Each structure stands twice: as C-alpha cells, then as structure tokens.
Length: 588
Image 1: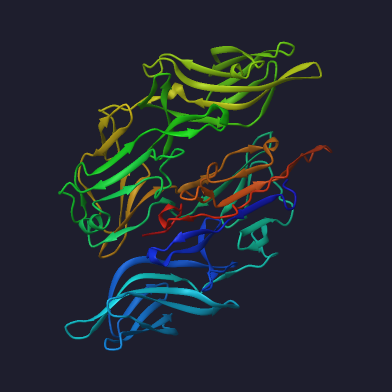
Image 2: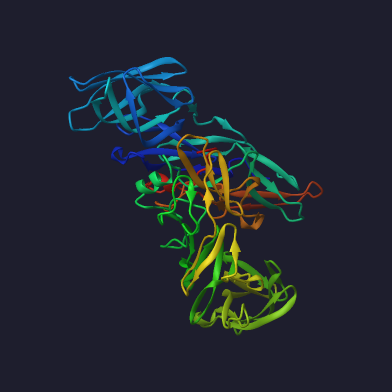
C-alpha cells in the first residue's frame, strides 16, 4: 500500500524555441506524456493550471491572395480579408468551426517583415496569445495582391484544460500549481494487490508482480501505435528538403531521443545525404548512412570515472574494453551500472540478473577483508579477496580472456565500502556495481546485415553502415529500416516524413523496485515514457514513491518503508531547441 500523499508526480515547464526563431521561446508543460502550452500573456507570464494543445508551430511559406482562406486544422482557419498594397496593410480574420473569432490589421513596411499576434480573453485570463503570424512581404501578382506568410503558431484555445489545486486527476490530485510547474499526489491510500495493475492517471499504471516480495513498476499501455520520433521534415520532395537542410538530414540524440548519447557526444548518427542520385521520394543506394561510435559516460559510482558506451540501433551496448582501449565492433549489453547500497552476510548471494551472481564467501571483520565469488549460471568464474583497509584496493575489477577473441576485457566491477558486524555476523556493504553481458557479446562484421543496411566500414573508433538498395518514401507509408526503426511518411501532396522508433504493443515499462528501494524516483533514465529535455539536460517529468507499507491479510504485522524524497524542478529552466524534446505524435 502507498499511503496518502506518498506517490508524487511532478512536471516542470521548459522553454522551446519557436520554429520561426526570431520569435524567441515559449513555455510548454508535459502532463503524463502529453505536451501542452500554458495560457500565456504578452508579458510572458503563464498559468500552469490552464493548458492548451499546440496545433501549429512551423515556418512553412504560404502565399495567400485576398479572400483566400488557409485551413489550420482542428476547425481553425485564417482568412486574408484584403491586402492594401498602397497602405502596406493586411487585414486578417481568425475563425473557429466556421465562426468568426477575431481580426487583425497588420502593417507591413516596404522591404521589412512584420508580425501579427492574436490575443483573446480565455478561461478568465486576459490577453492570452493564441496565434502568431509572420508576414514576409506583400506584393502584386498578375491579377491581384498576394501576402507571403512564413511563420505560424497556434494553440487549441477552444479546448483548454483547467485545473485548480485539489482537483482530482485519476488516483491523484493537484497539490501545487505554479510557474515552477505542476505537482500531483495520491489523495487516498493506493492498495497494491499481488499480480495486479493500478491505473494512477491517464494511461499510466503501477504494476505489481506475482511475487512473495512486493515488487512494483510503472508502465504505460499503448492502445494505439506510438513511439519516440524525430522532427518532421517537409518539402516539395527530397531535393527540396535536402537543400533546405544544407545538403543532408542528420538524426542524432539531440533531435531523436531514441538514439543514445554519452556525457558529451552522440554515439549514434543517421544521415540522409545527397550523392546526386537521391531525388524525388527516392533515397539512393548508399545515401542513408548509419554510424555508431563509442562515447564517454560517467559511472553511477562516480569515483570510478567514466566508461565507453555506444548506442547500436537504439540499444545500449559496451564496446569490449581492456587496458589498450576499446573495440568498436565487439559489443556487449550493459546489465548494471548502479551506486545502490547492498548489505550481504557471509554465504549470501546477490542476483545480478541474466544468470550472473555475486556471492560473499567469507568476511574477516578484524582484518577488513571479504572474499567474493562471481558466478555465471551457477558456475564459478572467478573470486577475489577485497581489503578495504586501502581505498584503492576496495574495488574488484574482473577482466576475462577469450571474449570474442579478446583478452583482459573488463566485464565486472564492484566496490566494497565497509565491513561491519551485527549479532556476530560480518556484513559487507557494497555501493558500486557495473556488469556487462559478456557471455552474449557479439562481433559486427562486414558480412553482417541489419535491416536495409550492410556494413560499409569498421575502424577502431566506429562502425558505419549504409543502405544496400534504394528506399522509397511513398506517400502515406511506413518504411522499415531496422526492426522497429521506421520512416513515417504523411498522406500529403508534398513529401513530409519523420524517423520513429515504434513502441506499440505492451507499452513502456519502468524499472522494477522492491520496498527496501523506497524512497525512489523514476525519470526518463529508468522509465522512458517520461519526458526528458536533451538540450537543457533536464528531467521534465518525475514519478516518486516516498513511502510503502507492506502488509499481509494473514498477518497482524506490517513493515513501513519511508523516506523524505522530493524531486524538484531546477531554479532556472534552460531554453531548448524545439527538436530536442521526446514526444509521441500520432502522425506527421
């Protein structure tokens, strides 16, 4: 059971650059995976308890004549009533569901662009910015006047969500609403029956395993296809898009969060280049290039420094590493990177997952020594005596030979912090673990194929693959390039597409915790359904359990696990580029 007030969800605002960057930034708030714009006035002040969906944010060029209507979608439309070329003015009208909403007369000085802003009084808020229009210029066509627009921004002001503190949202209620963000907590005890799932809010659940030990994890269900996506790229055709993007389209961890990134560098890059053969809707053979290269990442136990990690088609791997360096083409899955604390008595075994285990064979309390035994599938692998008298000897680094024909490969690290005694038993305290799945390591070779890719280059520092046949970005299609990594192409006259890692089916699950892990916070790192801002290096959404009461209906005893954890938004939220946000759109 989670007592009242001990399940806490928090989301922080973040500032996004408009697609038309001269406008600067605007605030967004993510609420249970959905991105909203808080109602904002001309001074930049916003109300986090009043949220509207963002409908348009682009810098596409539109040429409109007098009396012409631009369909903005969702029932909204912009009409050019008339263009006064002599007076350098444009009269615009905004409509919703065919009904007049407001109008605006915009002065357009000769040789200069200008902006028009629609302000409305909505949900008891005055002068809310609902739409922005950037006008490049007005000119005379063959028969009439034309206004060129390049910059549109619109919120769904007709369908605003309004909350006040105390309002319920699923099993939660709003406990704080302010410019620093939103906080919700459970307003009643949440019972966690064995082998069950409990919906807490808007398609987010807590799952409980069928286990004698209470084990809990968050997850979201995906009744419809969803996934992690890149920005949308649009133009008349590929030639047009590539020209607008400077000759190539590049996807990295900065604009496609499914790609992994190290502390400072990207580890995965996908490029659509133009060799002169890519045109229309066809990516020519060899013009879709994928590169994976290791980058440094901090160990969870920070005293160990950094290690090399690489993403390979959206999964996290460790390049096999020894004292001479790493092998970019020989990869093993990362299983553990933790600074959690474990206390083990003599004879106790710590299950590391995937058949790996660490056993405390014996503890010499007086001599500050512990004998550790590392096993795989129950078979002995290696052992070591750790003497914690000297800090430099408190870490056991296990390296093995014969891993994909490489020797002295670091496969496991453990740090023993202290040895204590309780009731006559020695206890070893561990608070640093790192492990790779070396038994299932793999080598990428020139004969390897991955979806539409074949390996084109292997160096000491990277693996490069390219498409071995033409790829057609056909209208209204889904083009697989490797497993669940696809290009989604819109049903439109122009070419419009984005890169997507599909996460349909069972949805997205967070890290499983036990009661002694409390207090605990889920972020994007351990529950990818939550949002993360790459540019600002900020966790936008967090879900925390501060207290769990474990009980049995057959016993009068129960145990409480409590903490004082509170996740906080940063004092100063950094602006981010609009392409760096992890989001889940339905279509391009």
